[in-house]
Length: 460
Ligand SMILES: Cc1cc2nc3c(=O)[nH]c(=O)nc-3n(C[C@H](O)[C@H](O)[C@H](O)COP(=O)(O)OP(=O)(O)OC[C@H]3O[C@@H](n4cnc5c(N)ncnc54)[C@H](O)[C@@H]3O)c2cc1C
Figure (spheres, helix red, strand yellow):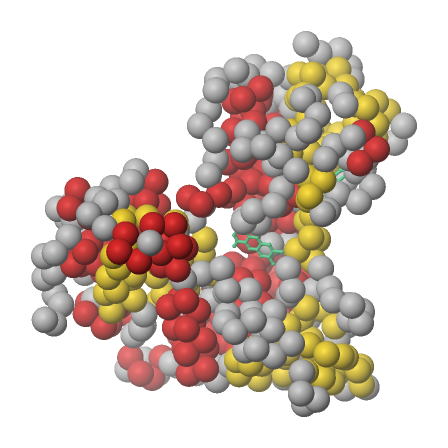
C-alpha cells in the first residue's frame, strides 16, 4: 500500500529502534516512511554509544602509553590533543553514518526530514504534511534529565552531549550520578589526567547491577584515583568564575572545573501528540504491552520511550520485533530481563540475566546457587594486568539465570554469557565446550565447571 504519503508503516524517529524497524519492514516488503528531525542513527550513533566508546578507546590508548614502562616499553604520555581526539571520533561516526544513510536509501525507505507529531491514530504530520500509515511506530528516544536547582549551561554544567563536545580536558570534574554514563565519563576523564569525583545518592555505583559488580567497580575506580562518594545526594550548585561549587548532603562543598549531570534519561514524548490521541502514558514514558503495542491498536512504541533498559540493542530488537509483528510473523517478544548490559569503563562491567539478589527474591534462598571465579586465575587477564571476576547465578540444579563480570575487556564475553542465559543452559550442558587458551573466555568456562561441581583451576 503506497501513494505519495500513505504507507504500511510510518516510523517516528530514526534512532536505533526506529531505523531498525524501518529496515526490517522494507525487508519484509512493507512500505515505510521514516521521519527524523535530526540525523539518521539518533542518539546511539551521534551522541551516545559510538562517540563515547571511541573516547573510551582513546582513554585505553592513553592508559597504555602511561603504563608502558610496566611492560618494558619506553614511551610516555605527553598529552591529550582534544582536536585530534575529536577528528578521530568524528571519522568513526562519519563512516558509520555514511554507511547507514546509504543502506536506508538502498532499501527504498522514504526518509522525511523534520519534526513529526501524531495527529490521528494513523497519521503523523510533518511541517503541515500528513503521513498516513496502516501502523505507526513511535521511536523518539530520550533526553538527558537534570535535577531541580541544577541548570545545565553547557559550559561548566554539562550533560553527556556537552561533555562529548568539550574541547579541553578539564583539570577537575565532578560527575553527578554513578550510573553507566557517569561511570564511563569518569573513567575517560581520569585516563585523560583529570581529578574526578563521582557523586552518587544511592549506596552503590551502577545500582541495577549485582552488588558484587558495584563493589568491585567502586574499589577499582578508587585504585585509579577516582574519588567515589556514595550515599551522597546533591544539595545545591554555585557557579564560580573558575567552575562549579557543589554542596552535598551534610553541607560539604566540593569544587571542580566542570560538573557532568548524569542522573538518567527521560523519554522524549513532550509534544509528540500521544496524550491528545489517547495513548496511555506511564509518567512520561509510553505504556506498551510486551508486544510493544500502545493503548491504540494501530500504534507501537519502541526504544527509550518505553520503560526498561535504555540501551541501543534493546531498541534494535524491539524495532525488528515490531516490523515482524506487523508483517504477521508472530515473533517472540523481547524480554528486558535477557538484554545484555555493558558499562565500558576501565574496568568494564558486563552482565545478563538476574542479579543474585533478584534470583533469591524470585526463587528463594534455597533455590539459588552462585559461584565466583576470580580473574586472578585466568592467564589472559594476568597478561592484560586486569583484576575482576566472573560470577554465575543458577537455579539450584537448574539453568544459569545470571552472569556478572568485571575486568578489562569482559564486555566481549557477554555474547557467550547471553547464549547461556538465553538458552537456559545448565552449567553441565555448556561446561564441556572448550575455550581457546589463553583467553578471558576460559574464566567463564572455569566458572561453569565450578558451578557444575568440577572446578579445575580453583583452590580447594
Ligand atoms: C552518552 C551515552 C552513551 C550511551 N552508550 C550506550 C552504549 O554503549 N550501548 C548502548 O546500548 N546504549 C548506549 N546508550 C543508549 C542508547 O544511545 C539509546 O538507548 C538508544 O539510542 C535508544 O534508541 P531510540 O531509537 O529509542 O532513540 P534515539 O536513538 O534517541 O533516537 C530517537 C530519534 O528520534 C528523533 N526524534 C525525536 N522526536 C522526534 C520528532 N518529534 N520528530 C522527528 N524525529 C524525532 C531524534 O532526533 C532521534 O534521532 C548511550 C546513551 C548516551 C546518551
